[in-house]
Image (cartoon, rainbow, N blue to C red; front, side):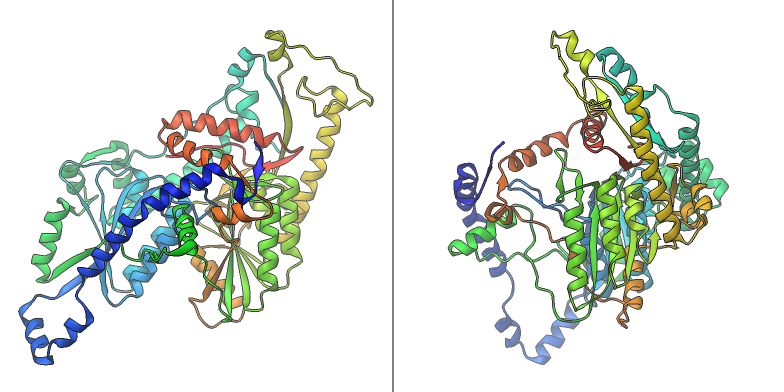
Length: 623
């Protein structure tokens, strides 16, 4: 597809006009909302005695912040196109929860938990934020309907769990499915020629085997064992049950609301209005649910061309930028998604892509900013390009300011590579990390083309000239050369990891071989320094940076690129982006097996766009 600069995008111009025509209704609604609010002059007209009498006559109104928790919760706002959706992300949700904790006008919080599909790292981040709110003396209530295991583990962190009579609780343990494509490839006469360094580095297994290897099974059995132990411990502690009881309840799995309450898994059976009425009756006070609590306020002055472009930028899903103050602060650099060379972006299906150029520039910006005392590198990545990972690692090594790594759901292989250069590494107990190994290869599709009468003739010079050709698999000479290159990269990886962890290389290699560890296992083996949240990492960075404030100002990098930044930049903007955004909204509604299959194809393409990659052994969803 061609790429264009700003004036020549007829399609975008059309969409701008459509959006502009929709403007008056939203502005009117905002004006009506403002007009319905009592004016300051009306309030001032009341005498102190009148106000005191009114206070005695009316029951005290308490505010309960209502925060919805739904879907996958991306780490933070990412680049968006014209059709990009404004979705809740983890950073915003925790910020709103922390704001409620410190807001004297908020007396309690309710989490409305619906179909959350977050990883263990994000789950534990949210649980920690809930505990901070409770420790501040404010109750947190969980409103659930038909909670799955993920929903329930989050709800357990709250003071009370409320579910309607018709709801169903589903805590069915852990279930992991691994899909293999070798037989499909065989039928299509497609050959995956994939090499690996490390017995556990099974990223190629889905394409070269029809079942998991023993090493592959061993590492994921260990992960499931630890996840299950964490799950049992969490429920037992939060619900005041014995571990043996919890395991028995998990084996039962499905509960009606009545059965769940009898088992001590929830606290109240009620519809929302019933529960709120009961709360008001027991407290003797009126409660107001603030369903937009903590959301950013949108400036609806869209007059003139400046306002018009501001409106389109907001419709693109982007936040207005705020200028950084001169106050000493902590920079948080988000390193998210599959690692590649070049600039960050998103995949066709909405996955994050971490570009080494983008992350290196963000780190340099933080290093050169005199107001930044220290840096937190927030990593949520399964790995990717070996070269890109090393370039990011090198930038961290050259920096004078303290750099703390904070691991999210996943910080494995290349994700671990970029983390190991930091001064300290913090992970959640449920983070997936490690995977110190290398994989590489190619997919040969020549026989597939031959079936349809597509033939290829080859002229070559040099014994290994066809090493990158997709028409045929590796020759013996090519395989030897490729394996030697991968072995050298593996030695670099293990040597740098050993230096970063202050271990002997041989000791480190006992933990390497491509093996994936949970954060808790990694801590026990010395691959990370502490178990903790992003907030813990920020506080540690503040301490190392010499800041006394435990809740310092943050500079978030890299800044999300707005649609019009892309459109008006010298680099131009791809006309594909808006179509891709629209396509994603339809793909998101597909059955999960179909969506995951498409994601596998997408990952496979990226996997073989680089000679060698540092990527997790497998893309797996553990439920």
